[in-house]
Image (cartoon, rainbow, N blue to C red; front, side, top):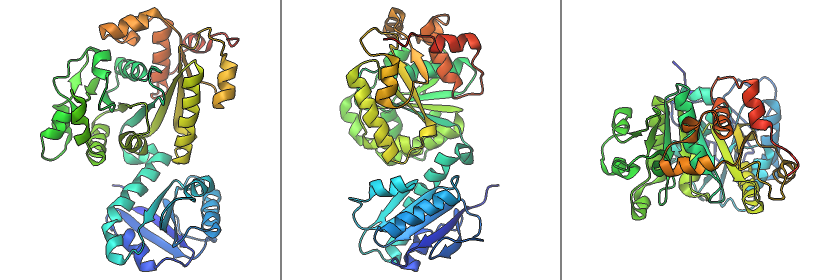
Length: 392
């Protein structure tokens, strides 16, 4: 059985040691293996490095950078006091995986009350660096900062393709006010996430399973509320519990998000193992995607865990794939071509990944699914995925 997460603490001498120890006072989950006023040789092995400072300073930034350089695979968590304005970017640029901001003043009792928040943040940082550490399925969050980019289309076809490949998959509609996952899959909203919330009681896999709607592909869906006014009752804490249960009982959890960095969307990204960003071949979509990627970077999200899907990638609209590379700073991982059959499949509630498997669009979605499984991409499929003209 996996033991507690080992924590190594370094500090600059400006925060009370008893407060720091109270923050890390979850004995069954955390083990403080060392407490030092700087980094040096022959320190004990640890899963997480905590840099603690009363006020963020260049010295704290140096400790973060040194910790990252010493053990790149070990996440660094910054714990500091006061308002975060002005130094969040500096902490992330130094290499911090996340940060916890304490109120001023903060005594031992308050620190102990915040220990659950700190434990969650530490577990999140560990899971980002090593998804296998959670012993759970993948969680892929679809991000499309501009509406109409094909995010729901991608989420539902990815779910269908994964189910077709034999994976136990569930797609969560996190566009709580105007979600269309049910429509895209041809599923009636007889049971929704709001009904799950309203059922009360403890949360476990058997209970959540009762509120999932099954698609003919075998994929399951947790649908958005029927009415927009019900969305406001669904809290971030509730969603975190739902995600944890779904990951414990599925190979892959796919989360379709609204076209904005809402608290619910940020909470999903925080506990995800992968992010899939989606854009169209137009200037507005690409501009918003670039801003979205920059926001993910500021959140400390590892770039290696982000995939890029470009929809309508063969459209002749005056923007070439070389232009996309220049604007975004990276090439798409998957190119989905224009196809009138895609619109028909959405209107019929039948994902094209299953409805027309021989089409290039379907092959692109299956190629995307292969990025989240151990299924090899054949040479023929790779040609279909990457064989579009780069001349725009």
